[in-house]
Image (cartoon, rainbow, N blue to C red; front, side, top):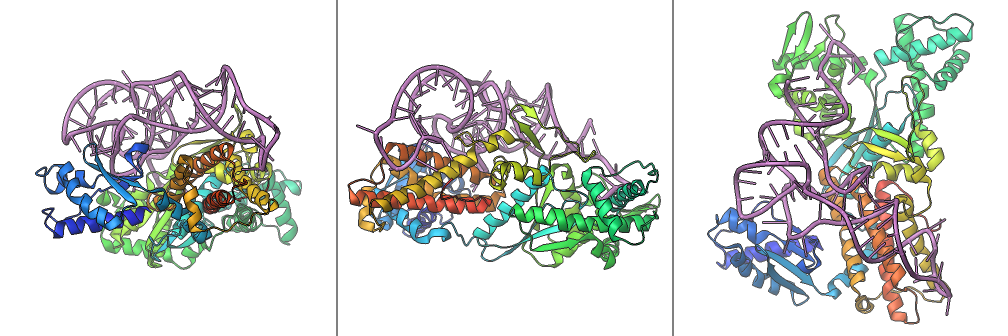
Length: 556
RNA sequence: GCGCCCGUAGCUCAGAUGGAUAGAGCGGUGGCCUCCGAAGCCACAGGCCGCAGGUUCGAUUCCUGCCGGGCGCACCA
């Protein structure tokens, strides 16, 4: 609907220019067309006349007179079902007939699960890299938030017409592999009755013990402690953690990756050295105190970064540059990284390196994920990653279910901290937003069952739609028509949480309508019309829940 | 100290690119089931949008300064 009006507005504007009603045929930037908060400001409103008057004519024309010039062209274009008014500083408000909205209902029913599909992406390729958890232990809530934000984003982008690839980057090399190896080695020593070596850092937790035991039984020659051997042991452990814990948990969480990239392979294929060499050739490096530095301050970073340590070992940064370079050579149109908030300083240096290597660094977008705190009502659930003592994603799914975990983690902007209330997530009342939205869907299904019992076969026809004349019905339809806009908003801002808000708003509007007005009545045509409206709501609830990966139940 | 993020109702938070009278949920108070799912709904109360300036026809939104919080500032990953 919005698209249609915007198109008409542009046409009317062009006509007005051609016929000399307006002096300069230039479409101003920052033109808005949206549904105003105030009902008496119409179904839609645009600031075109205001920005045109200020921006283009530099105040020579008054915005209200600009509006007066455009409106006649709009009227002939749109017909008598639309009415335009000038208001306030020069806004053009659109009022449309009920019939216009009623047709929208049928349109939604007809499109079904395709409703909300956009061509914004036009098939452009986007890679979304997310989770990328170190394979040193089970996933926890923080990873889950990352996972669900990335996945919902991927789904929304797909719906917007992009080709999306989900990628998980595996950090299977370096110190954390050695640390895991060492932790496993110590447990194995304990298993055969040796006194474990004292180390400064290790992974703890029940899973480490179990893993150590499993590997002990599996490997004939127990591994005894050189650095390489420890890293190898760590890698064996990591592989199992990945296969037996991380991957199945993600699948159960309805997050599926198309690609798994290994950091180790970058080393094997000498990609890191290659990236370093190319950076040297770019002229943005220098040597100082035995280390090789990248002069990222050439690219707006606040300090230079080490690429190769004095001991000859490349830093994680070097590996990351190599990784991103490799990504960029795969030729996606856009790369989205979902990172923990502690990586805040990172985009500057990575973009800097990419730019130094002649890449369009702007094609890299970063979304940050803040911490999640688990609470039970007022009580904070204590967590210590260091002690291996934390609630895993698996625990959480077992306790509250996938739907609640996903929905709750999308309740707020990803860059703000979030309290996850486990008690609330389990409640079956309206306080619980997932329940509330799913209940709306189940209720609609129930009404359709009822209609069938009453012998009413739903058969939507355009002529019947005029029976949808109530203000509440009109509001519902306007809400429904916003769905495609929300999807587009997510594609633009990369903020999928707006969808959980939208679904709640829609559910509120439905529950209210349902309590006040009977759907299935003696009046057959009215029943048909209202069933059509309910079907449209059902479609949008399903499609919206689909994007955030939550089930739309028929009964609950 | 420097950089990034954030201060909106008692609480948890929405308010993309500046728009018309700032919203929702929870909590509080008071109401609604001979009727399609009351697992629901309605009404009321509650706000100097952290403070002070600036830009603008218009600022919760943009700029500057201050106050108050979070995070980052490794030859760690």
